[in-house]
Image (cartoon, rainbow, N blue to C red; front, side, top):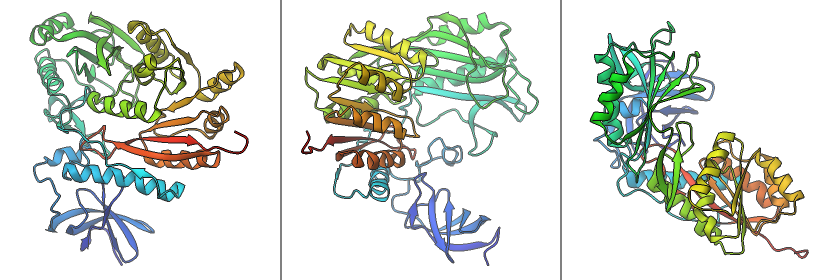
Length: 456
């Protein structure tokens, strides 16, 4: 009988989709952080349930040849780099396996070409956006990251996967807050002023936006702080205050105040310029987002006569990337502010053949159908939960020749592809793309082609 705090010798046989090691003993499956396939460990049992248990590494008996020994364990403990202990070449294989396994398990697909994961040359310091909590630790204002599954702040200066200039600015602002004796937020007591520091940096433009998230509007001596920030970081072209007075895990509140410079920063992607606001959704890894979008464009094999629907269009980044190659782009996005951004971005790039509506994707499809719009390609880029059944049916009913699916979750992608196959679409190829090196997340682009029936 296995019990909590027992220490047992186990072999790690697999990784879960979240990168936890898997051990099997006495009919139970144990999940263990910081353990890799091929390793033999002495495992302390943390918790035992009916069929599963959780353990932690007490000591390594045999380590994997693919273990990255250079990783600071803080990055694992905080979840910043939950796959960072695995060599990068193996991370790419792990991500492809996630896509292969899900397609087989959920959609019974095993005969489709799934290429090797597209990876990064330098898989560090890629994030163009940071949201860093500010708390008091041992009596001192600190910035860092929460320990996984908790709200205990671990002070961290180098975030490994963030743009180094962002890291530098966060530390500079932290030191200023200490100097000006600004009180950090205390969740339990609901006291203190500064909750989070958010930074965005244009990968190509270098422009930086700093967002200070506070519990109330008034910040003592804010003008002097701004002066020092801009003097030390001339690339800061936007400083914004966000007021979040709610007892919530949400980082941003509803109220924004521009304290310095402009409301947005500019950056470019695949040759188009974009205005990015504090709340814009913009891919955090510009280099790999360009590869992801280019893959989707290549898979779609667009021609100048094509009409394309861009579902879940965000601020327009995918649709506007290929708008000049096609006849017309119709975009739909449920977030109104993003739709306004997409319209501005189309104008900014002189694109006149892209129109955007704020609606649910299903409703927009129904309206476009009624209006007699016949897409040649439907491109979807849904959130992690994937597509709704009603959207899948509505999109298939429009009978495009191709559906290009950009996914950030192989499990929901496989589920959705299974339904598309029932509706007469065949999966022809898949390309996994690594947008988040050192983490377990994987993106993929899939191409579905309409099968010819006798009625076609």
